Length: 87
Image (cartoon, rainbow, N blue to C red; front, side, top):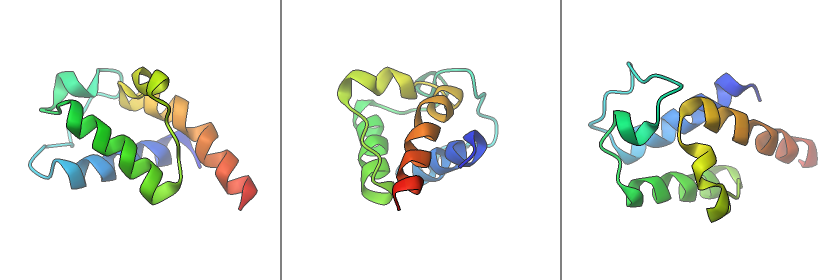
């Protein structure tokens, strides 16, 4: 998976969790919580959906790696690709 594909996966999850949010103008390098009305429970939902839908584990110590779309891409792309190589 490319970083852009991973970012789209994250956007798809956010769209399901926060359907009223406008995701069209998100800046990839600005914290998601600064751009949207996401609270800590919404953020946990994102992490849980990554695990449920894709088998991606994100330890609590790494949650800051998911602050922006860009950092999500950087952090999650190797995880997705490691899963793909196993499957």
